[in-house]
Length: 200
Image 1 (cartoon, rainbow, N blue to C red):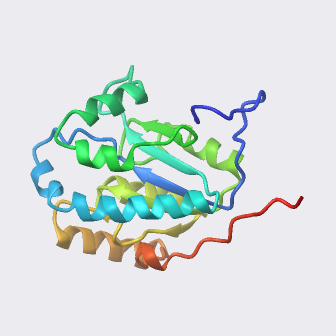
Image 2: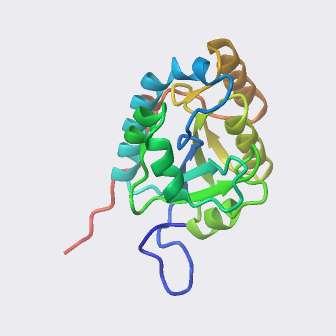
């Protein structure tokens, strides 16, 4: 849930048919295959940061869907600080959540499994999800699959998700395009609605 701007009834203040989900980028990369991912992080994180900036300009809600890494007493803010000091500090610095972003901690691969994500999206009124992050062939794929089964329209920008190898990422993107009906255009080709301007 957001760090601020919550109303007294607990409902999300934002309303948007489209939401941007950022999966597992608050990450210390402390696992065996992390060296493979590190090669792709700079390019992906720059593109994802630009996509997030454009989404916020269009007033779309941004939801960080992040693994709790088996720590059942996880505090997301402490997790951010921990990951900011490790080998993923460039990634975390570039994609650090803003105060009005939302976050959901997940215990398994899918962002929907045993989390509040579905409830949050219902409050937001979102039916279209832009899913990005790490890793394309695991947590992004599992989250997208569960979203598809819940009848969400999916956009999975092919340049805003990475896997251990380019081949694995291409295969995951192709699978999501074919079987989950995902729009896999690159992030620069995603068009957002113009920002609403309040009338005087």
